[in-house]
Length: 453
Image (cartoon, rainbow, N blue to C red; front, side, top):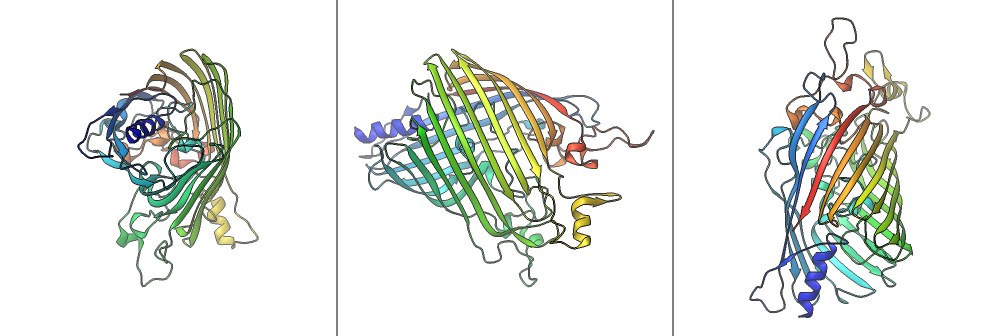
């Protein structure tokens, strides 16, 4: 009975504040099995998203279709498997199919519940990038995650998952939480050398010639190290596998988080030399309930992205969001910023500086992926975070997960041409003809429905 209660409680924390899981009886003593389904249909219209860039693009797709199975294996072990069919039907593409997105087992030597818990987890894990990146996909302030301020260029990892072994848990009555360990990270087979910021692969043979020094990323096959610490200054933010924005609770929470992700010689910089990958951040999360019927939620995160000299993805990121729920409606605002780092003229040659800043006919590599993205929306809660609808207006400037800049031949079979001709009578141009913040600003509208049962 205790094992069953633990399994149900564990399933609940996977979608914080409200959740539902179906318990399936199985003929194994001490073992439990729970099933949960998640659907996220959405409608998206993108200004200048048509192939010729002169009209909007309209899209109906399913952002996530997930089947989650989890439970206990005795009093000190847990397991979880999640299957996802992400972005099904996006751009009219139905060729992608479901993947194993999460698959791990955990051992809790001192027990699964209480004020102090330590778990050893191994498998395909959600990576500890930041507090916001560790929140449930059912319970963001915004319609979806905010990913424009941190950069892992050329990563082939699906939805911030990585195979690894990590320690996770909490201490001092859930006031201090942690997770981190050793992960696979970048490998020669999964790297896109020089690719930024797209998330694509090239063949291992293209990337790695072992007889040529400096050809292969991770030449020593060193793993990636990742970690996240969360300090609850007021209240307690721990107790589950995922965090959540809205709580429907009475007690305030103020939490400070710090995170780091690092791997040696994992990518190549703008000049073709091997370089380390490092993403480090500090976050602050606030949940301030007025009553159970109203709460203010705010979160800010500052990122330091190190992806090598001359990379457009080396720089500083800032992500912020705030929402106020009154009853079943929560208006919100969000902003994501990325500022590329300039090259150091004292450390580079004249030719390398020219690569950084550009020359006639060639754009520079720095500031090629800057971002200034704004969101405003309304969240309508029909059944807390189990069933809610987001209507979100987005203003996209530079690199963004939305807008015509997010449409490319690799995902939509075309690259829009939203820029007017450079000369009268000339051809229309793609956004890549200009540096990111020299491009126009484009708007989009997202209607996103999250349903869990």
